[in-house]
Image 1 (cartoon, rainbow, N blue to C red):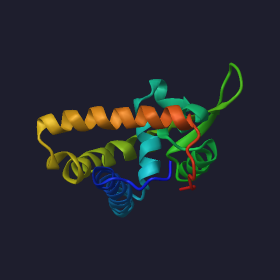
Image 2 (spheres, helix red, strand yellow):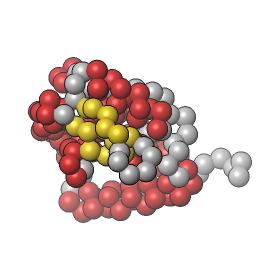
Image 3 (tube, rainbow, N blue to C red):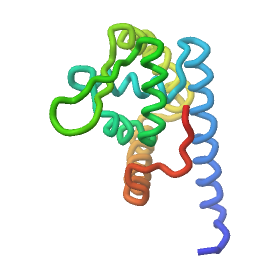
Length: 160
């Protein structure tokens, strides 16, 4: 379809672009300045914190973190160098787990309150309760749509 976007579509797309560009940028800057982490690194640590035994297969981290396996592997290597994560061979099947170390757990616990304050200030405080519920429904619908179109292989991902 090569038709131009109508005025509502332009408004919606413009708002999505603004959110997609600005929110991660502000979170990246804040997390790097305060905690020495990128937003994606924080996301990996938080996913590990929430997983059983604080460990997860790299392939599952990639899927849940919405990054490519190569990006997750690169980030896990960086987090390994600073002592926040270690790689663990799995005993069944193929693959490698990333496991959160005690210092990695301490780092994510330290960063989380500031991260949540930023999320609230950047996005959630601008909405009332009904709008938050509506945003959740719309964002989930779009996320499912993207996953259906792209699967677990995001297009155009960069390392970081």
